[in-house]
Image (cartoon, rainbow, N blue to C red):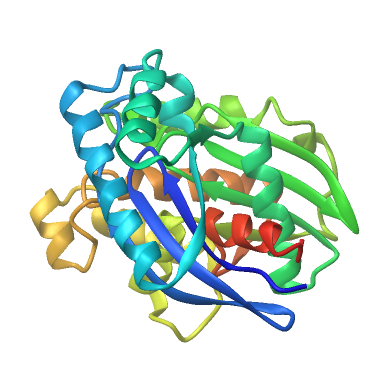
Length: 286
């Protein structure tokens, strides 16, 4: 079956990204993309401001140019947790549709978790794993055992955690949410742990560059210890991206707590993203 090139847009809680993919045999190829470090809301549950609606709508004009550049006639645009929580999301949706003709729709957290797990299966070929994706507004977790077993979308917001100035309290908040998962009472020794998302990507680059596809609990702990008391400017000097410098340590705490919860000293990283997952689904590869 012949498919058109596809443009996939992800309006996340912490960034706006668009990628164009083409299908070649049993794989997909990234043709181009754009990314903007932009927070749709300053905290979960807040309305999207008029200025942020304007900026987001402007991003979609860039998306149209990107799609045209790469001969993409199909555009899929999704929004995640910040949009799920914003009462006035329909205003943004209507503005984008009127200005560009693109329908931006919200996907559920469980849908997001399922896509992450299915693409992890495609990319790693593992049959038994726990996958997780850390966004700025929520954490998606899935259990895969030959087929998708369970999905969870957890209300753990890096943006909200960054406003709590007590590490022990933050750890308790994360642990309490993770303890609602049935997996915490089970033996997960046969499962691998697979992670994705910007927090993990940055952590991996700071820890070991591009030499390995995994990071360990001790390495994440050491990175957290190094960054936790630094200013935003000092973290940027250490190699943390500007749009993540104020929140990265809180994402690291989430990684640490998930590893402890599942009982794994190592988390493998996939190069997949929500955009990759949606492209794979479109091309019927997952």
